[in-house]
Amino acid sequence: MPEEAKPSVYLTFDDGPHPEITPFVLHQLEQYDAKASFFCIGKNVDAHPDIYRTILEQGHTAGNHTFNHLNGWKTDTTTYIQNILEAAKHIESRIFRPPYGRIRPAQASMLANARPPWKIYMWDVLSGDFDTRISPEQCLQNVVMHTRPGSIVVFHDSEKARERMVYALPRFLAFCKEKKWQLSALPE
Image 1 (cartoon, rainbow, N blue to C red):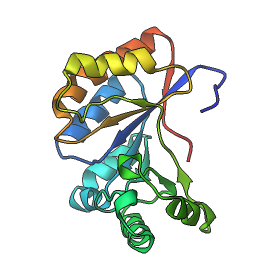
Image 2 (tube, helix red, strand yellow):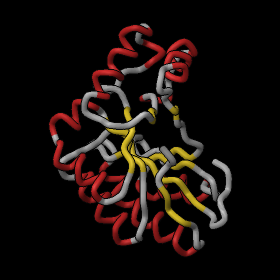
Image 3 (tube, rainbow, N blue to C red):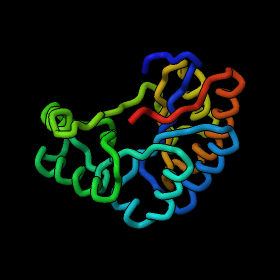
Image 4 (cartoon, rainbow, N blue to C red):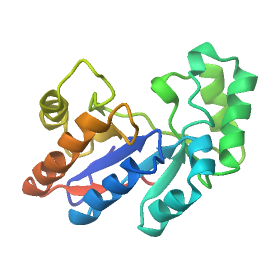
């Protein structure tokens, strides 16, 4: 992301909303006056519409992360696009992040050439909170060591990531505030 007048870090969360973890994330963001982008799975939005609405009401952005977390490399293009469009019935956004960061060129091209077009966001700092082989402290080190102004950082508001994310997120938010970096949602 290009640097802005005030140095910004772009916080993102994948895979929610989750009935316990997403409210924890929202509370942490509020404590630090931070905004974020939540790349939601359509079936999770369908199951937890109240949490999805809270995300938006608190000034965060939401993006599409497919209806049920499909890997673009392992899914034919027609099925993949249909899955994104199914999620779009629940997620009012034209920003998209492919699960696992995996998308075929044909799939990306179809999204970019749609009318209106989709904007695909990846990341440059992967927290690793989903990786059960790393400690919560290692997860924090991943983000602290690699984040710079303009970085797009990805955490997960999911059960699998809970232990590492719950430890790392508040400490990372404090680190960014200490650096005087604005904590922002991605532009839609």
